[in-house]
Each structure stands twice: as C-alpha cells, then as structure tokens.
Length: 123
Image (cartoon, rainbow, N blue to C red; front, side, top):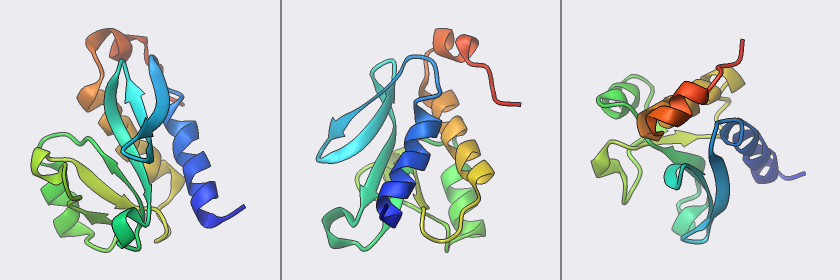
C-alpha cells in the first residue's frame, strides 16, 4: 500500500467513527462530512503542491496557534484557510493520537448538537 493510501485509510477510520459521518469526493478529493457539513478534506499533491495532508475545520484561534508553534506540521491551507481551517501534514510523523485529536476538534467545531450529543469519545 502506498503512503497516500495508508494515510487515507488512517484518516477515513477516524472520520467515519463520528455520528452522522459520510465520505464523498468533493473537488476531486476525498472529503468527510458530518450531517452534510465538511469537516476534513484529504489531499495528495493538490494542484502539484507536493503535500500529503488534510485540511480540516478548527476551533477559533487554533490555526494561528498551531501554525506558529509547529510550522513543520501545520499550515494555513488555500481556499479555506481564511475561514480558520487548518492544514495538517500527514507525512511528517504525526502521531495517531494527535491526528485523531485534530480531527475530533474539526468534528466538534462543525457538527450539529445532536451529533455531538451522540458522540462517544474513544477511551
């Protein structure tokens, strides 16, 4: 399995574990939704940028904090960065727990109250 395929499977497993979650192609890339709202886009060399990454919703202030603190891991993605979304490199050794936490924050930022109430965080 290629590194991109492995990364997609990792992201998919996390994203599809949320209530009301689904996956479909959006703008040519796998995108994960909760109650029809996008929470994570998966990108492999988007428009030739060389990145294996996700773009995800983020709580207010998280993008600036993480991009400043760990610029090798986090970045401001094009198109959605101005809305506070966060870019996360997947080929720089991010630990599973950290990735899962970032994606969980995306879920909690976007999901409707009923989905959040139905969510049981992993122990």
